Image (cartoon, rainbow, N blue to C red):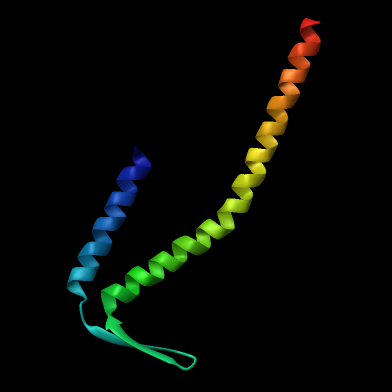
Length: 84
């Protein structure tokens, strides 16, 4: 619940920022040139940050899940051995 409240507060702050900063900005990257509202650029950068965080976190989560499954299997084996 605490995490949801924090996410909602951050989302509200982003919306307020987006409404207050509707000026058009230029963005150059290599040979590409974009012009878009500042708020759209902010949302794009936030999304890229979220995606990069997920790409970093997913392998770690997968490794932890694998470890948990292996330990659960070991517990079952030991419980079966203990009963027999």
